[in-house]
Amino acid sequence: MLLINCPYCGVAAEETELHAGGEAHLKRFGPDSSDDDFTGYLFHRENPKGVHFERWRHVNGCGKWFHAARCTNTLEVFGTYSAQTTEPPKDLLDTLRAKRPGFKWRNIA
Amino acid sequence: MKRYSAFAVAREALRYQTGWERAWRKPEPKKKYDVIIVGAGGHGLATAYYLGKNFGIKNVAVIEKGWLGGGNTGRNTTIIRSNYLQDPSAAIYEKARSLYETLSQDLNYNIMFSPRGVMMLAQTEHEIRGYQRTAHANNLQGVETHFISPARVKELCPIIELKGPRYPVLGALWQPRGGTARHDAVAWGYARACSDMGMDIIQQCEVTAIRQEGGKVQGVTTTKGEIDCDKLGIVVAGHSGVLAEMAGFRLPIESVALQALVSEPIKPCMDVVVMANTVHGYMSQSDKGEMVIGGGADGYNNYTQRGSFHHVEETVRALVETFPMISRLKMLRWWGGIVDMTGDRSPILSKTPLEGCFINCGWGTGGFKAIPGSGWGMAELIAKGYSPLTAEFGLNRFREGRFIDESVAAGVAH
Image (tube, rainbow over all chains, first blue to last red; front, side, top):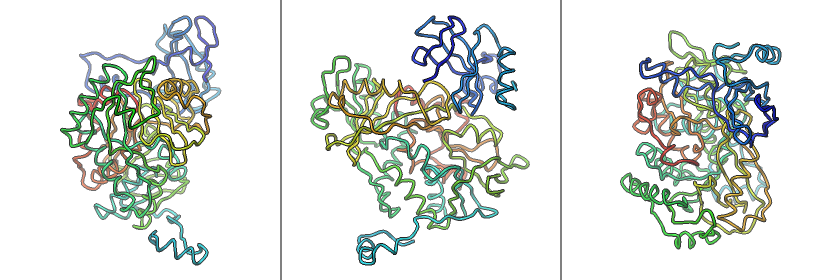
């Protein structure tokens, strides 16, 4: 059972309180984009074995969406942060670089 | 290879079982092979087997990071059926089901195929209409299925409660030729036959890089050294994304955990397979008497081969309403596997942007039933560059919008 801290209400929420929302920080491409960009946006999700950035929703709690950094190989949750951002906060990235030297996710390293 | 037979059993009985040989050799890798298959699960071994049997390509290595059949081949609920809505799916799954019928004889290895029949319960009005449509589609595809009444459901499976409070049974899609098989034996049987053809099955050998030159595959780097090849087949299910990254292309796949469990063994009480897709659960009884129960996949990416307990709880809670007698059973074992999910819930059997490199993945929650058909098609694809069985399952279908949309057709649990 994952335990994830909701950054809005501060609750250490159990997995059953949460809903997984898939990959974080998607760049959206519309009808005017190239086929490659549109295919990538629709289907090519990041699927790392290791550090992953995701969206979660505290569905049976405050109801708000937020972001989380989690390891798909150990299920360790590194931290959570606001949904109102397009990239992970610096302090979380520093934690990740210390804990998982050499990690890479898209162009974040 | 010494053949297994009644005579062999009698002969060995008379000489204290001293004459049995290893089922497959344990070779060290050669410098070069015509074809390397990465992944010695059911699909990888079947691919190698049909490369040898149908196309005479026997200079083949099957490389496995762990042990043979230790991934999803040994972790599924062993259900075999082919009652799919879309034509390309029905074709490849029906090919697999029909190959399963004679696989024990073909491999000289008892895979315990048991065509006991598979029923998918209709528990809402929508499901009734959906399954009637599937039954009509299956009739056109040459797959024998029927839509049956609740009374017939009760006759085939007396332990079902038809008038459950939330989920009444309103009918079912019945495939009498579906069933189960011994999943490990499928991998072992193919491995033994491959080894007998002179193929090398190399276990405990992890691929760490895929070498290429001028856009063409050269070979793989492994924990047992470098091995060259003309063609490479990647058949690694949950880790497909990891291997694709080594080869330098992306896959429309996410890896998630799928779980199953068995109860303590009990007397025979159910001789069909029952799937209840509305409540996301399916059940059959193994030859050992255990009730084999599977449910839905977790909602988040995962490589740990462990899932969330509450998913199992939800599955069992729902099944107890349809099968009240299982409420007092104890759980015996519980496990998870990493499945590779595509956007349309259909597999990918395809050439890749890297010349000479082929991929077979994306079977998601329903790979076991497809093993012989998948191997058959994949072998043809690798040997000839084209197979009618796999033609619709190319990587380009996502870009071109030609989905084989079983996620809508089946909903879940396929």
